[in-house]
Length: 141
Image 1 (cartoon, rainbow, N blue to C red):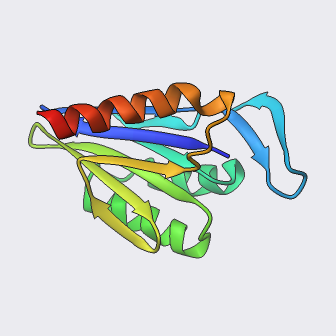
Image 2 (image 1 turned 180 degrees about the vertical axis):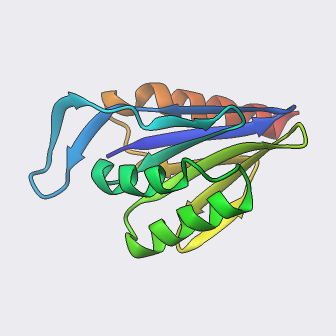
């Protein structure tokens, strides 16, 4: 399973994701890697957890749309139509970093997020360390 973790702080957004593809029906991870974080424009990016083919279709539909609420609504529509497809959407709004979690039938602004799986196997170790670091920093500052 994919794990994406992200945080918006001090006008910046950090997103970390694995690149392996999991076939839930076969129970195996393909050896072909796929980028799961994509730059949409100079001021926006998106990451996904779920089927890469479906994600690509949804993401391609927002490429010509200016960053902001319209993209968020289009990602939400794509998520609702494919409930196992989640997105982390980040964009700059007047110099302020916005981070949106598109999952569970909603698009919610958040300071920190994860989508996908939090299994503790070797493929997710780096992302889990990043998530725990971000959560620790968020709780202690």
